Image (cartoon, rainbow, N blue to C red; front, side, top):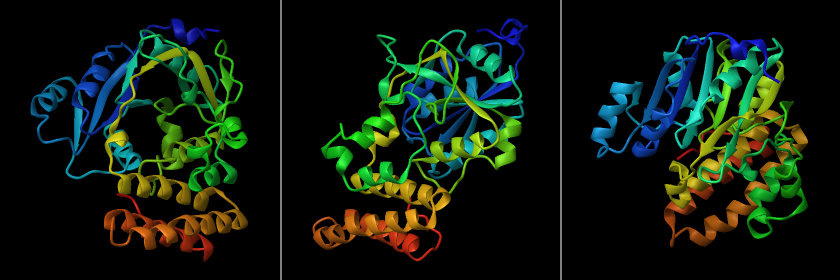
Amino acid sequence: MAPDTLHADPEPIVDVVIVSADMADMTLACVAGLQDPWVARIIVVDNAFDAQAGSAREQLARDTTVVALAEPHGFAAANNRGLEVGRAPYALLLNSDILVTPGAIGTMLATLRADPRNVAVGGRLVDPDTLVTQPEYRPRPFPKLANLLVIMLGIEERWPGNPITRRYHGAEVDDERVQAVDQPAAAALMVPREALDAIGGLDERFWFWFEDSDLLLRLRARGRVLYVPEAVFRHLGGGTFRRWSKSERIRSIFHGMLHYGDAHFSRGERFVLGAAALAVSVPRIVLFGRSRPEEASAWRAVAVGGVALLMGRKVPAIAP
């Protein structure tokens, strides 16, 4: 499989961009595994770190280039701030809960450079202890209206094995060969800077959900996106999103779905998605108006986004 570039003398031509918030120890572990000759610069975007993480921030400042944000940014915007600092011809977007295995960066780079039609490559995420592929992070197709509806209407939560979700997460992917896919796990994604510049980077209207689907959909319009199973990344999990409040989760997830639909669906599909957003949000606004005001406020933001889709208008920002 190995292209000739896999055996070339390593040169520092990859910027690694890591967005981190309130995850100091995990970020330090991620950075510790990036001593690779292909890496030009490690850029950690300090997305409003916990003020108590002083010593960890000092160590990161010694080992990496830290981009400190005064207030929390959306994940797309935070990645863009990190990308703006680097100059290397390739960028590896890496989640802070990832541990890089030896040779993974070189393997991804060699595959990406093997054919000018390639615009992105994603690695294989595995359990950190067993090294078994994590099924929920296998490559998947791009979201369709039906996928968003089963999430929005709560069907996926109550019936995880429904046919729509099963087809979305259960795509047949061979872990023994490089192959073209729609959407590899963006937790470890390498892209030529030229391709990122051509599409304007990540869409900052997304906060923290579906920004990866949007990015890869726009990249794939320019060339091939590949899954490289030989490039293995240990995925710890337990990131920032799990510590968010319920209202923050509602705003982020629903905004991601509504904005993705706004950006990529037909007029009829946008209307259906907007109607579904109203159907789930309006009863909760009434139900939680007094007992859970913060949650009711989040649902009101969802309703506003649903109305925008119904009226053929742009979905406003409803992020946390």
